[in-house]
Image (spheres, rainbow, N blue to C red):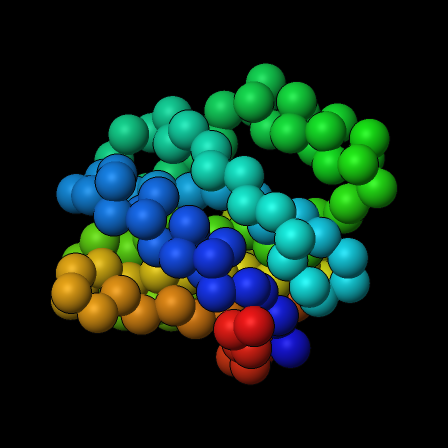
Length: 132
């Protein structure tokens, strides 16, 4: 189960809304399955249908995480016109079954849909989210 404080949940949603109609992305840091920090990232694809993080920015953030004793808990991105469910590209690019993949659907901008999954190979498993 992914656990995220309300303020950090809201920060993820705000970042996704700020990038609309383009996809937003970022990293979730913390301990075990508890998010303690959100790192909004630059989507270098600058696209409404895909995302790619800036590799230099990503390395800098990963270094900050290590220095603060955090680990990568999750990766988030938005879907601007589709459901909060991993696409075939999301599945192909998944890096680890130990990381939460958070999707924020902005199909209904007034009520964004925040969902988390674990991806292992081609297996997509919904993950409960506890907003603290």
